[in-house]
Image 1 (cartoon, one colour):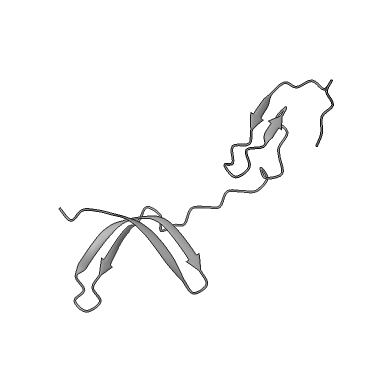
Image 2 (cartoon, one colour):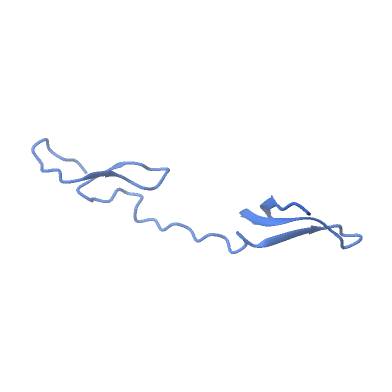
Length: 84
C-alpha cells in the first residue's frame, strides 16, 4: 500500500507485534495483523516435579515457563523453586 504526499494522515502508529513493528497509517492493517496469536501451551504455569526413577523421590520442582513440542518429544523450561 502506498500514500501520496498530499494524502491526509490522521494517525500513525507502529504494529504491536514485536517481529513486525511496521508503521500503520490511518489505522490500516499491515500484512501480519490478520494472523492470530498462538494459544499458550496448557503446560505453561503448571507445577513440574522431577523425580528419581529408581526411588520416586522428588529431586527438583518448579513452574513450567516454556514448552517446545516436537514430533518426538518436548522440552520444558522450568523456573525452579527452592526446597526450603
